[in-house]
Amino acid sequence: MSYGAWRKLEVSELQAYYAIRTFIELFCKDRVDSIWNTHDGDDFFLLRIPGVSKVFTLKRYKQISKYVHYYRPGIQPDGADPTRDRAFKIRSLVNHMKEAFQKYYECSENIVIDEYVVPFRGRLGIKLYFKDKPVKWGIKLWMLCDSTSGYCHNFDLHSGKDVDFNDLETVSITSAVVIKLCQSMYDSGRVLYTDRYYTSPILAYYLGKLGLRVCGTSMTKVTGFPEELVTRRGEEQQGSYEWLQCQTTGILATRWVDKLPVYFVSTGFVQEQTTALLSGVTRLAGS
Image (tube, rainbow, N blue to C red; front, side, top):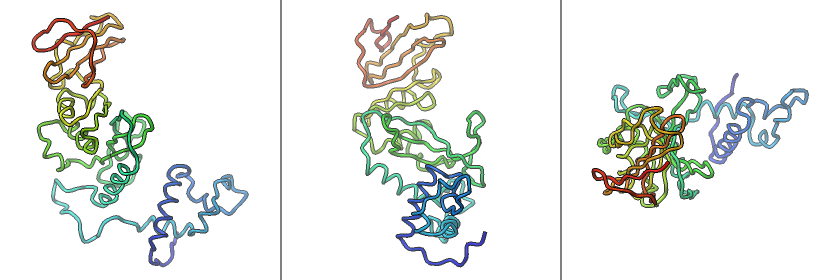
């Protein structure tokens, strides 16, 4: 498809392009041409949006999509540098989006962090393959969201080795991701919910010093998790539970038995049942 000669792009036209692009991605990304459709006999004529064609033509929309970029071609990292930012072409856009997300919405008390995959099968250096996920190929994002509305407060791209984590060498990569994403939430007293991929006593202690509470399922082999709580399948009755709480940090480790034992790590929560002190921890139990 020939797009014709390029003409200068005005700011107002670019703003309209992003508005239409956002609408397309949300509602009809698989039928882009139908928005400009003029044939009433087409099965998708109902998707036609007359107002869009008054802003610019389908050719102009595709022309902008083909040539729009977010960096100066003369300024790019050395391709031989293993620590280069592999997402440098869109880094300025990503940073602008994160600033806007945090500026215009105030999250509730409960926030959550998890990963998200943007489906993509084209040629891209940061594209990953996910064997056990419904979306096999795509771009991995870490997202910090409001647990009530689902609003994305902060996010980051998985682009390989990230040099920005060098100042957090004392924690794991996953913990460093969480700490970086939560920077704007420090000293807010919010509760961060995580899954077993991120949760650890070390992360809970680190965020506790920064004014954030943590609650999440945990793996038992992470550093700092009390071995006294670990049990085998069938050793405990279904529905039973037990807690161990560190006296100095207040970190609470919990085992709850369903069909299999489920383990949690949390901070900032007070338990009502308390028994004897054992090896520097407070043991709490129930059934």
